[in-house]
Length: 387
Image 1: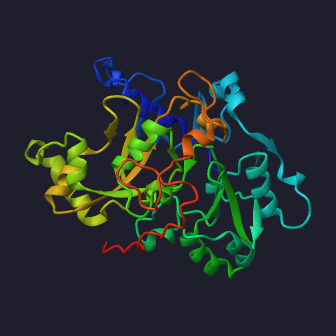
Image 2: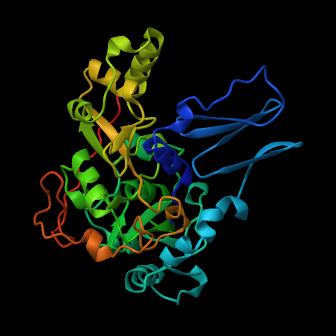
Image 3: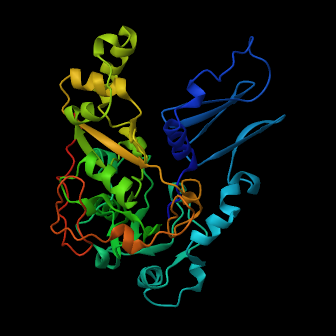
């Protein structure tokens, strides 16, 4: 079960407010006085004190005292204040322990309890550390198989990367009653485990969240943004963006139409050379371009405009994008799946969010297909990286 990350979304919300921290509120220190220092680079946070360094990934928490710096397993309650609010408690689905399942067909019970009640399992497995809900054989898993998908890997090698946990995700979408197996990763894990006792973690999604395949095989950035702003649709997160997992690709021309990309000649020569070298060696396999979608006149922000501009100058035509959608209940989304809240704090009906009168599996720009519009073919298999 995935846990939404508060930090990237909060940063996106700050961007939407005009990025006040970038507008002159930072102070200059004289020398390097004793204390705790933090910095963020490419979505990672580093705690540094007296020569000790701790690297924290998204959603992890660090602690420092006179004994040094360390990463801690669970955030203390005072840091998790959004989840103790009435808004967080009122939006969340009911929960149960996996020990409460009856004998026989536990996976089907998990699916049924989510779609029919809905109820979700707690505690949340830390799947990146190898925790899981069930051990399942491949034939048990394949009963839930479909062509649907909620992310696209950078290339086949990224699915076999040692940094990717050897845990299979099965995503449940209560708003459209869909079960989506990460079938590409299943192929790798099936070989690794010999088809038996594959660790499986179920991820439970809010009632307004859909897989990217919901929009059809030719989805555009404009469609996703319009669906979010006009209908409250959210996207399931790509699991390992640090390995290049993304939602969709956009042409450099399309990105240039939405964002003010810098002219390459305006990028400092040293920075441009570094970007060119990294793109030649790695492409976007280390990280896709992040686009934050908000509700307002300036509806989208891109996190690496210089990288996109250099890629375009190098003749790279297709840019992988990871979409982060900032919605009114941004702070409580991470507290567990449930019914989304509108700007006034009231619950939004899943039917109001998901249902559409459009037909067809590939909608025109800005439109949404109905939940029962048929099976969406998957995108082409990712190509092997040349690097």
